[in-house]
Image (tube, rainbow, N blue to C red; front, top):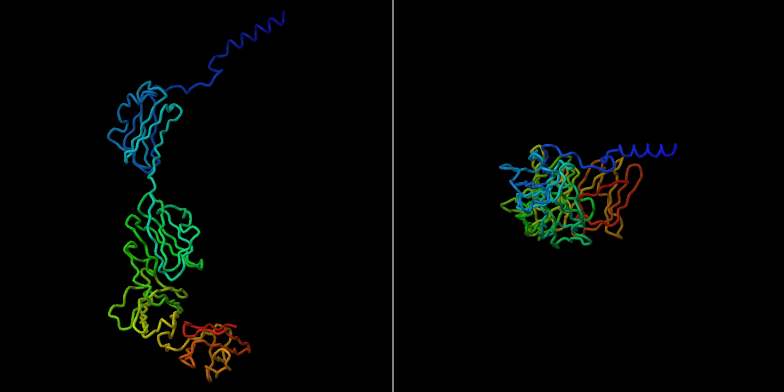
Length: 396
């Protein structure tokens, strides 16, 4: 009898549980549905149609934006009609004419409609010509504003001096950035905001970084010698002009919008000059100008801009004492020949000082150099071409 009573009680409890508690239910439909439309893409949303679920293809109804548009980064709140229902079909029409259809969207659960159309990327292709005098081992490109440089556009190749290659960079706009890495892995040049839509070819050469319009930049250089300038003046160089002796036009400032700080190096390719004689003119940050003519850059491919460089004679080389004590003896000799006389004569080369030494034979360029310091230490440099050396640093 007790078992029967217990069974009847359990049945009564089960009967009292509402059916709604036994299965998940759709959120209650509000009397008036409200949704937010957010444009998180890059293209303006021109039209938005919201139709009852399953009826959109037959009756989209009015454009819910009316005479408004929804620009990128903006949002808007819309109220739908009374008892609209939860399920809806959506039709989004963008500024570029593209349409997006979404069917049977549950607006009771998803109260935010996201528009996220982005500008398609196009391949910006152009030819890169290397006229720098250095090998390019990597070349990176990206759309301006992006953070990631992406893959090396040269792939497994390198771009030798004088070579050219066609590269492509995907971008949604015309503006791109370029980063060029040269062979020593220390020389890196980067330029931003290049108009790739107006770019058929790009010449990498001294000055391309500072050209007002890279698409119009054409290096007229490269047929003459290639030189290296080292700033050891202790001052900042503001302008550098190198031009054939006697030329009426000094040509462009080889630094462009940049400056050459003390210790920095500048690589240049020059136009041909009669007898390979050039004039080098520099201006410092304080407005001081220095000029030297008759430089044979076919033999002297490196030059240090330092105190006294203007008066340095051709067929001579500067020696700098980087040791802790003075140099008391300096001897030059052709390889295998006995040491010559002391080039310092009765003088010495003080610590941190420099001296210009005329080569014993103007027809000979290669010499062994022996320097003797006051503390007895001696250094012997291997055979060195002193005709092309900007300066020789002596350090034990």
